[in-house]
Image (tube, rainbow, N blue to C red; front, side):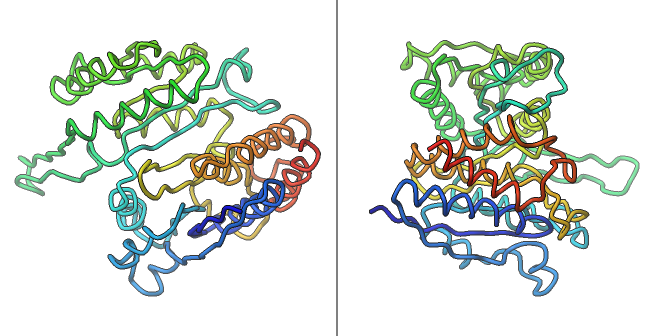
Length: 355
């Protein structure tokens, strides 16, 4: 019987509430599929920072390498200045564990409202592969003559051939092995960004030669945003850099019905990956039992898929689709018709019904 070690960072605000429901679903699906797991709960996040002044030490980061996967709820506290937790925990884990792909499915489930007129689940089903450890997020740059009328801010987007190529290759493999349409779109800005986007375009075209079965095309990032709204059915897999990926995945979350259903993975195919709901800690809803846990449940689904438990992952997705189609009034907090824990129970019941 297979067994996995999973680090759980429930985090702040409503993070622990949604993680509890994700773990409830994990327990149910593990029984159905006969695998075991061991959880290690870690108290990293804004609350810990306020209490101790620590975000994530070097030893704690190194300790994460011993796990098979990381399950993250949400971190962030309104009493912590912006950027401290993001840089000190989230980016530190992504960079430190070399989680060089951010994987974001954009899929409209049945029964979920989308702001796009006349679009149905079959029209919104694509995946964004975002480079996750380079670009502007490296944090390189400087101020010149700061706090003077002549002040200049320089922010560097660093893109290496190695980093770009491994992300693009991951996207081609994903399109070939995980998607029926086998179509990959490069999203960049080659008409303006003469260096970074040029590197992405040249690398994309060279790697494409080794994947003749994958159909390729290109879209400027501004055009991609336009077509994601007008004709999302055009897309199958999109590969893009860190900055553009950050932007278009939030747009993707909105067209698939909102943050309440959006999950993502920070992937190191050769190492430890981390999975999370895309929405933040939503502190104003803490303790009320009204937050939607489905994104956290979908993060568990992605985690299991990465571990190779494909049957369990598919069962969770089908159960979530059953719940959205037949049970929930809305995905919005306080408007679901059920409490947070009741929604988790509904997914567990659907697992038993559908399997």
